[in-house]
Amino acid sequence: MADQPNDTPNDTGAPSPSPHSPPSRRAQRASGDGRRDGDVLAGPADSTRPSNPWPRLIAFGLSVVTVVFLAGLCLASFASAPDREIRVRDTEYQVALPKFLAVTSFGADEDGRTFGAFLVVPGDLPAGGRAFFSRAPGTGCNLRWDGGAREAAQEDVVGLFLDPCSDARYGQDGRVVAGTPPSALHEFETRREANSYVVSFDELTLGACHADTAAGCSPRGEPRTRTVPAGALPDDFGRR
Image 1 (cartoon, rainbow, N blue to C red):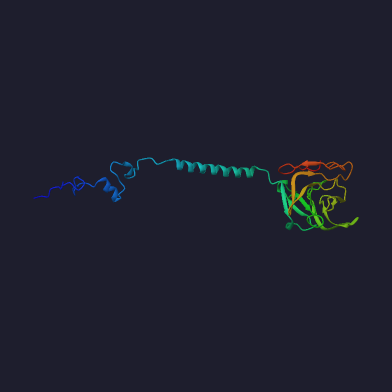
Image 2 (image 1 turned 180 degrees about the horizontal axis):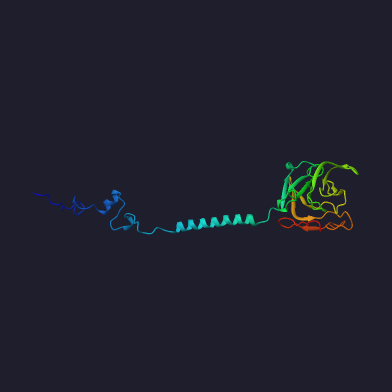
């Protein structure tokens, strides 16, 4: 005789499950297959559903913002005016030896020599420094420093600024030693900060007049200044 399903109630009064019947939901959960009948969320992934677009949109937006920010920094660096100050540390300066500071935005002379300033610190550091414009007041030529030059009328003066376009000679303090230039050397503001000298190129103070009728100079006791323009300097800058 064929085996008949055992419907004999168990101890709890409920019929015992047939060995051929599907496992109960409790048995499925116990077996750990992680899937429940009728629960579509626990089924296999549905590739037809669109994924959440927000993470990718946010990442794209951040990328665009970063690119725009970097492009703005590059544009600002090219469009902005060059640095209007030059800092010289004590270790970069030799006492009583003028140090030339080239300022490329000032342009150059006919020989291609860049204009700038000569930083002079007389005596021992950290005495106050002065920065003289390298363009000669009378001719507009680029000054040259000669550490061994002497002037016959002032033998105690050693080292001179020479104007290659005239006979004008200037001492380390910027005053006229020889020749007939219209004024002493023009100079830029210089200040002391910690272990450095800082030369500012915002304004130029015209040198003291060497003759009463001279133009482009500061009368005695009346210092006159000129605002330094951005870019290459006009040919007559500092001479009127």
